[in-house]
Length: 477
Length: 81
View 1 (cartoon, rainbow over the protein chains, first blue to last red):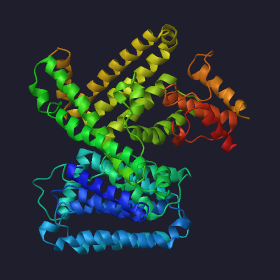
View 2 (view 1 turned 30 degrees about the vertical axis):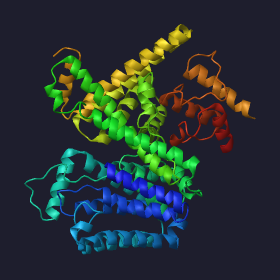
View 3 (view 1 turned 120 degrees about the vertical axis):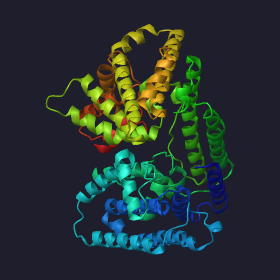
View 4 (view 1 turned 180 degrees about the vertical axis):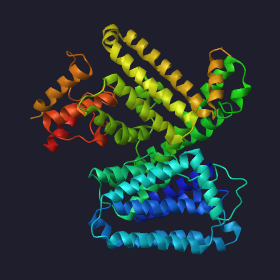
């Protein structure tokens, strides 16, 4: 989100929270979120794609709701009304194509022809109708939904598949293939949307899914403050806030929300953007020759990525609070943690919790249940490395994110073993506050530098350059 | 009721997870958010609870939000018995 987007959204939320309060809040959150995902989607080189991407998000969310909702909720008439209103909002956005370009403020480029949108509505409607005719609602739909969501996710994240998708979409819109690139189809917010969808499908499969109407579900998945950069909330928690009466903004509720928002703006647009001027990137990585300056740009990147991301999170939390929704925390001073395990408990917390709940714990449980379980260290190595590799892949299936994931997976494993071997001795040694402080501070410094070196793989697109940067940091190049 | 639940869990954590049998874990001591129990040992704890009390703790419930100390864990177990 750019600064002007954030200020407009914050102002709208502030007005609603202080003037209209609970009145119509559910509708406001739904309609604003639908409009915002079209509004924030950047322009794409494929014709019409900046309109189709958010529309595809909506269709996917509605279909997921349909397969996860229970029979009784699914049949309620209010869902049809909600769907008609959402479709109406999309149609109105589409109709702005007939306005002069000065008034096409809500989409990145001129919206495409109406007939395709109507055709998409028709196909979605017929799919829902076909699903509703099935007398037995099979659990296999959930599996299909899960596979489809993961498949789309891979399509976006694996460069070779993204290139294929771009060529396909270019052919579909009758465009030349000469300039085809993996960045042709940037589907804004999809990384987060997919993870919220997978969470709801998996919870439904394990039998714990609150009954929510289609409007509540759409609002949860594409809730505008958290749409582009998280946090990844849980459905039950979000719905509790959405349904709770909202007394509106008064000093006690406005103050913390405003403070959060201002803190976030300061972190993102003052600190992070200033650090970005000197932070490590593909260009300066090859230009800087001295060890000292290499450390400077690596430190700058380390702080930039933290202030940027945690600043965004503060902005999202602040705006949501103006509307009476308390999103979960995503960062808790991660660079001040004495070990890598603690770092990951406090960095992008909602993502790591997601991976723990839907990957790490099920895998660990499964490995534990073997007749002849493998040794504990092997199990820890396997689960930590695969989890961290997947977290790397979540950012993109490329070598640099693979190495970053591997770095952290191995780091967590080593910390775990080290801790296991030394914790009794360390507890016996650290009997005075001074000794405890020594252990704590050295742990913080070591963890911080381990994370900082890890960021080199994350920041640079080429692992070869990353390796050269690391050599330079230690004066070996 | 609750001490019967808390005591064996506290003993399990001290002996098997922390490997410090003499360590006393109080009922309101933070277990997860403090980093006392890591994510791998958390699964051990869940399996121990499932075996001992015959209640299921879901994979998605192994976090500080669901329970962070022995008191909260005991009431979670009690509510499922």
